[in-house]
Image 1 (cartoon, rainbow, N blue to C red):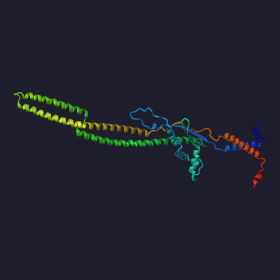
Image 2 (cartoon, rainbow, N blue to C red):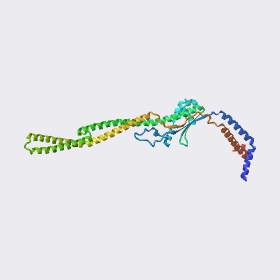
Image 3 (spheres, rainbow, N blue to C red):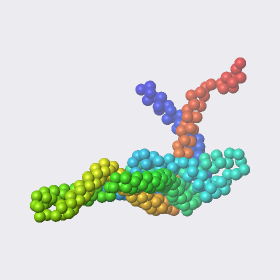
Image 4 (tube, rainbow, N blue to C red):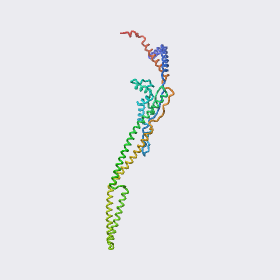
Length: 366
């Protein structure tokens, strides 16, 4: 009951001063209307885009079908693009391109001119990630067309910087592939020279045909030699056969024995070198295949480096706004009247509570 009486007392006190409260609120309303009319209109233009996956900058693997290539960026890719959009490089680029020192009426000779223009720019520039993981850049300005131009330029600059980062990485890869190709060519020359030397040393030129050829010649020679031995034995037992015939057969047998020894020596020499030649041929083939693969990858990287690389996917470009973003004059007026009412009511209640206090005596008291 006491609390209710207190509340009624407050209402009664305010009601007694209602005219004064009305005057204060009316004055606040009139003042806020006049002041808000002198406030400049600001227009906001917004562009929205998604970060692209770095997979877009990867060449197609040679001889492999790609099934898991990503198109939209992961959280780290979004953070990278956000960092670029909020970087000083973007701010400096827009400040210089649109001469914002003059636009924001900042004296360039002042020692804090750079700090002031950056502060003014950041007041009107906003970057955020939406709930759908898109990136949104907004710029406010008194000139609606300028706001749209600046926000689109900001997005394009973000894309360019992101592309430059990727292309710098690609330049390093291209340089690495070029050096690898040079080294691989030198390696192939060394392997080729070694292979030629080993082939000449062991007489190995075709491991399959030579192996079959040596085996066939030795078998054939042994067969002929056995036949000549048998022929000589048969003819030697016949008195009618002239000695010169037997001597010729012996000479033939002797020659064939030497030929057989030579063939077996060549076969032994061939067998000693064939494994070395096969190893060198395999190394040479693998090196040649790797060289071809590196050349193809280099060609793909260079082609991709010189093409347009998607680093963002544009959802919405910045358009010239038709309606101002601020000030909202109705809210300013309502807020001013409300604040004036609250402050005047507090002042009246304080005066009413301490109306019996002799303020002069209290102030002059020692």
